[in-house]
Amino acid sequence: MSHLSQSSMYSDMVNVFRENGHQVFPIAPINEVGGKTSFISKENEIEVLRVKTLDVFSKNKFKKGFANLLLSHQFKNSYNKFWKDKKIDLIVVATPSGLYADFVASFKKKHTA
Image 1 (cartoon, rainbow, N blue to C red):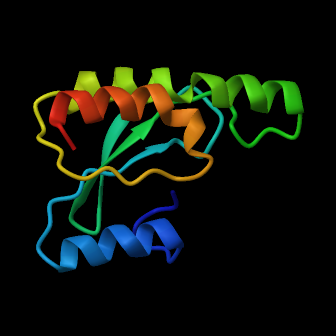
Image 2: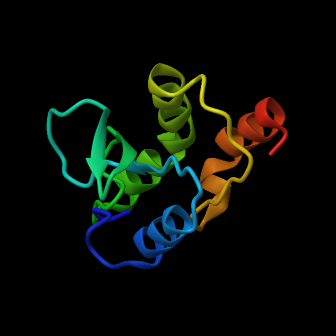
């Protein structure tokens, strides 16, 4: 997901939910390769959990595939570190959603979302 001040399908959707009075807790990979760790970013008055991942945009198919396989685990770990007490009632997932299956399944079970 791009920065919430930039227009994209996901950032526009998050902003519309917020404008309509909903609390939103977006989680997205950090878009640059480097030494950063996962962190909370304040974007358009919304807290966004930016998760340190491997290079999910790599041109090398093996590296990209491996990075995508780890996404669910990395998202779950970062959520538990930063937001484990947040109550979730709706989950919206980017495609391909199979990459997040374990993460989403644990959310659905925990929050009955």
